[in-house]
Image (tube, rainbow, N blue to C red):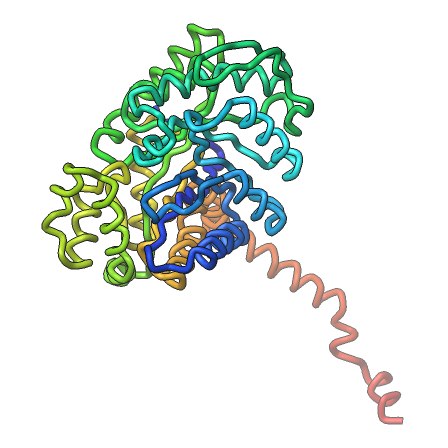
Amino acid sequence: MTYRPRRLRFGIFVAPFHAIGDNPTLALERDMELIEFAERLDFDEAWIGEHHSAGAEIIGSPDLFIAGVAPRTHRIRLGTGVVSLSYHNPFIVADRMAQLDHQTRGRIMFGVGPGQLPGDAFMMGVSPARQRAMMEESIEAIIPLLEGEAVTVDRGWFKLDDARLQVLPYQEPRMEMAITCTWTPNGPKLAGQHGLSMLSVAATTSKGFAALPDHWRICEQVAGEHGRSVDRASWRVVAPIHVAPTREEAFADLCENIMPFITYLRAVGGKPMHDALGGIETPEQAVKLWATEGIGTFGVLKYGTPDDAAKAVEDLLDQSGGFGRFLLLAHNAANWQATQRSYELFARHVFPRFQHSDRRLQSQEHAFENHEKFIGAMLDAFSQTLDQHKDLLNPGPSDQEGDAS
């Protein structure tokens, strides 16, 4: 039986992706405007990535970005999506996240991962083969630090000597931590081991989609083995979606800006991506490929009407067995006006299908089924009122003479 939260939460995942010719100052401003806009539309959360190479994903410090956008928002929760732990000393990471939690009055979600772009790792002298092990070692230090413990450990690439935070996070009892998951068991295993949330960023790839039920099974099983508890309500699934009034309009929106995205993927994806995208010469070909076969870890794009978008969410809920939060990938393949329209259509027409819309429908159906009784009672009440005040409505002769005088 699929888990259905009483109110499915929605958010956005901002890597981001910007064309090489974009002014980076204005591109970062637009990312902040997107999060402000999402809050006005009642999105629940936004996640911001960390990347250092290849020119398109230009946010190098999600915590610094969050510190900038937090004063411009009031309610929306803000997460690191993700901090690449193999690039940082875990003590500094924990200390910065605790400070950021105070600055936002507890709106922080702490997403972690090993690091995605191999170019980032090579520039810092980090072996891609070691990144996942380094992430695990970092997590084992960060969690006790955030819980107020003193940590002494030597992992070679970092060393802590009786290290302790001077300020603990604002949130109690624990700041939420989420670990990125693709299609391997590594992320779900770590999430279960430490009682963390899962952030499934490749859910619409063929491998990622197929692995969703196993991911929850692994997470729950390992959590039990370590005396931890995990909750589907905190599981987040990411998918690329674009919405317009018609499928034709959605397709045209995506054709406008998709080619810089394809150029970027050719640069970072190696031979497999070169082979997959080698025959792409037009925006139309690119959109069709993304919407049918998918592109790399971004999976299959769903474009179309709000009905199409709702079905995409339903399919992921059914396949996974249920989750509590759904994140739209901020792909930037459409222009700003079309992007805003997509988000608004999604918020207006997709949100309600997963957030108590059945109650409103039941209320309407109840009113229709009982309309004769309800309306009849109201008309009877009108009739009784008229009878009670008929003297005022039909004055006698003396009243008429008085009026004449």
